[in-house]
Amino acid sequence: MITAAQEDYIERYAYVPEHIPQYVTPISQAEPHLFGDFLVYAKKGHFILVGYPLSETFEEKRLVKALEDAVKRLKPESVSLIAPAIPPSLQNGLHPPTDHYYRLDLSTLSISQKLRSMLRRAGRELSVGKNAYFDKEHVKIVEEFLKTHSVDEATRFIFQRIDTYLSSSKTASIFEARTVDGKLVAFDIAEFKPRDYAVYMFNFSSETRYIPGASDLLLSAVMQQAIAEGKKYINLGLGINLGVAFFKKKWGGVAFLPHAFCLYHPPREGLLEMLLQRL
Image 1: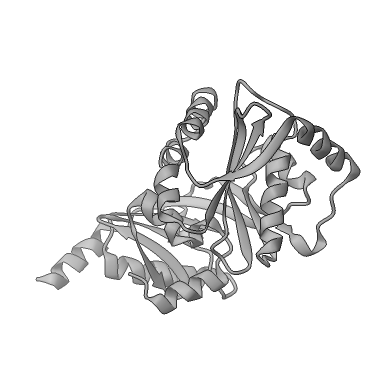
Image 2: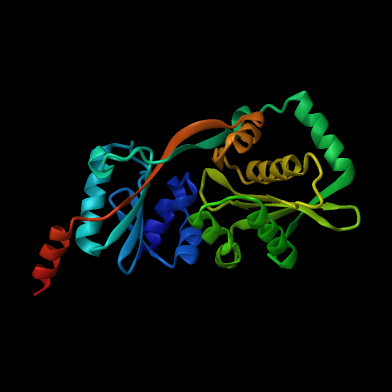
């Protein structure tokens, strides 16, 4: 478990979604821990190591040290590791998938005339508001997305548990775009827990009621709340694909952190050694 002081420390320095325990814990059912400057979410037989140090500069040797300490204490059968880079010793000759987190600096925000025109056009057809509840309308749009898009099992798992996350977070907000007759066209979920960052968590649009500019209106609303709360940045999430990355770039989002993933299995002899130490 993390202490109240550690929770304050995490909130102060968090800058990626995985630094937010009230997001990761309810979805993964894993308990947060701090190993050095790294967050670890552990459950029986497995843990997730977030290889983005909270306040220190990223160094592979610090990451490896945190991994070794966590394996020694928690004794997992497997480890999910996300980090700016995967240490060569953990790659097993494979090239892990890579992406980048995109960040919007609110102090240098500049909206193009073309984007302003799109916002005005969309604003004539849609109204943007907030909803305190994740209800059947939201679930339907998520289900439509999963039926029409190819996503990996990990992403599907997360999307199907968004309501679990929202019920545990007091600092997440649902932003909605609706037609004049009240029909839901698109929605965003943003998290405002970190001290300096708002985090753009999810964006979904209706497959049957698509209106150009709906997602732009929603991001604009997220930005306005982030500015009002004194945030310095918005973490816009991963690039994912060319279309998603283009959307983030047109708002001024810049790739600021590499993202890599690997699944690591600690050596069996190490596990045997640990078991013998218990005898």
